[in-house]
Image 1: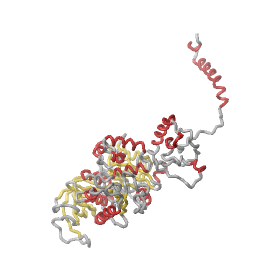
Image 2 (image 1 turned 30 degrees about the vertical axis):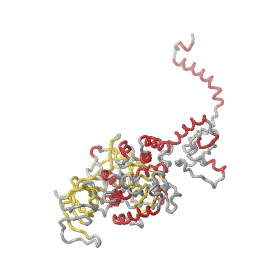
Image 3 (image 1 turned 135 degrees about the vertical axis):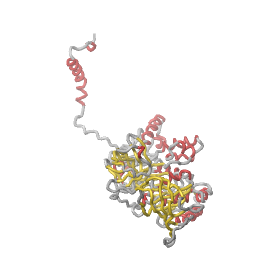
Image 4 (image 1 turned 45 degrees about the horizontal axis):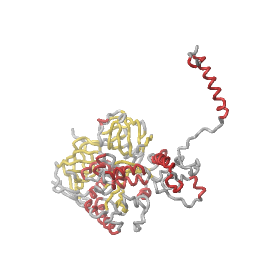
Amino acid sequence: MDPRDTAPDSWEQEDDVEATVIDRQLEPALAALNVNAKPFVPNINAAEFVPCFTAKPHTEDLEPAAPVENGDTEMITEEPWDQKEAEPNEEEPGGGSCGDRGPEVTTEDAAPETMEEEEETSVPKVPPTQPDAPKKEHINVVFIGHVDAGKSTIGGQIMYLTGMVDKRTLEKYEREAKEKNRETWYLSWALDTNQEERDKGKTVEVGRAYFETEKKHFTILDAPGHKSFVPNMIGGASQADLAVLVISARKGEFETGFEKGGQTREHAMLAKTAGVKHLIVLVNKMDDPTVNWSLERYEECKEKLVPFLKKVGFNPRKDIHFMPCSGLTGANLKEPTDMCSWYIGLPFIPHLDSLPSFNRSTDGPVRLPIVDKYKDMGTVILGKLESGSISKAQQLVMMPNRHVVEVLSLLSDDVETDDADPGENLKLRLKGIEEEEILPGFILCNAENLCHSGRTFDAQIVIIEHKSIICPGYNAVLHIHTCIEEVQITALICLVDKKSGEKSKTRPRFVKQDQVCIARLRTAGTICLETFKDFPQMGRFTLRDEGKTIAIGKVLKLVAERD
């Protein structure tokens, strides 16, 4: 009978027997151990493992690998070949998959190749330099323009070119889009995430994504172009520092987008009222057979747009920059294209990188208009920090309800941080307030400097488009920062002369299109707002009615409530 099968007299005895057996087995192994070996330090920045026998040895001192664009790898010619070993396989486009090496690949290598691709594709999803991410300047870019001008496609193409969406995912989208006979839509699926948007090919909600260049960190806000979803677009534009107006150069499409009912005009105007300082006009679809990169067509679009943009309030010399591009092929987005020899400026992404930085005050009062909220292990809110800075565990006040809340955690573009500066898109997890008690348009402030709230205010408004006259008692929908509220014009105070700025002595009985007036407005509920002079981002608004933008305006004075 095997002694191991019998129960021992005591457990100590059993342990000793086991231990001596194990010791005897381990003695030769322990003798061979190198006790003085260096501790293992994982090199997180090492290049991906290439399971081919011809792979070159990589040295340890690699820089953090920037996302490699498939096929766009820059060839470095100045360096001698023996120094190239320190670079992650520069000479192999596509980041060095085995299939690019030509005749040496055997059939056995096919399986490792797919494995390696899987490893490789998961790399770009993480922003490459996370520890330094907050140091880059944050800029929010909103893509606006008429429906089907190619906003989502350009957004998807930019994400691919900067390595935020990998080739594999795009190929998957392309296959799915082909099955639905929509092969030109696949790039937009990187931003149009829900099924309804993909089926119809129309953006509904404001899509969000981010990408980085050498100097800056950009958040893409992909606004819907369809006129039914203009309120969503206003919400997107109110978070942006920079607008990209996408227009289609295709014959007929530019004209429909620009006529009276088109969205090109309305979006440009709304972007200006939402406080966008700089506008880049991308003339898209230049690769279309009807256009074929023609300079005449580009100039024609430019000539029609400039007078209108001037009228809205953009300065053509300083604030507007035109450039041709093709969203579908990616021409002139990152690299200059040979097709377009007449365009001498920088391509789109380098141009964004070269823009001067926005001056934002970090020492101002905290103002964070809320765009959206949801429940996720507590109450989570989304919004763009307009001024001031927020840090973890800080006590803030939610206006206009005056709830005191505490910041549990901070996410800036889905990367957790401890503090945030103005201009960043934040997700905050709050303590001390329920999700039902928050509405979009509420504002987080610091207790020492609360934002103003009220129902009645005086404002200067410009009537942009309205068929009949507007009298006191007129109702519309007010869009101010991220807040949407019903409003009534209770009194017209005076007319303002557009050229001289003089105010009329008598009260007007009505105002009509293209007139400027000062009026008293009263909202249905209490809202947060500031005067335009004190805080421009929260003092601009638009008035909409029947799906059209009627007027734009700025808050001049807040009127105290009479009890």
